[in-house]
Image 1 (cartoon, rainbow, N blue to C red):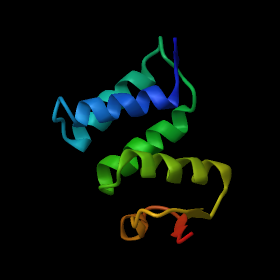
Image 2: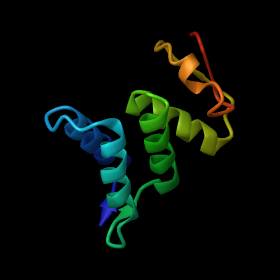
Image 3: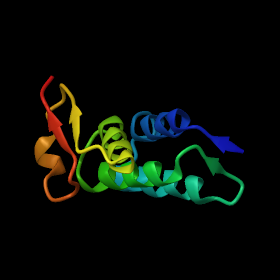
Image 4: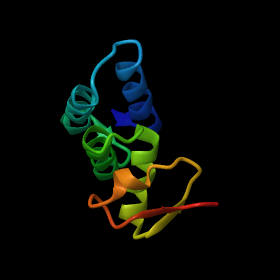
Length: 99
C-alpha cells in the first residue's frame, strides 16, 4: 500500500491534535507505519528524517519535512516566513533565509 507524504503529515497532525500525543510518541507511531513491510512510503528517508527533526528539534512537522527534502535534494538554503533558525543549528547544514 502506497503511503503518500501528505497522508503521513495528516497522521502527524491528527495524532498531535485530537489524540494529544507528544512529538516523540507521534514520531514513534508514524515511523512504525513507514517501516511496516506492507507500506510503501512515497519518500521514506525524508519522512523518517522529518520525524526525527520534528521530535528532537521541536520543529513543526511541515517545516521539518521541508528541511528533510532540502537535505535529500542537496539544497543548502530554504526560503521561509517561519523563524525556526535556532532549531536547525547543529542538526543540519540547511539554513532558512528570509524571502
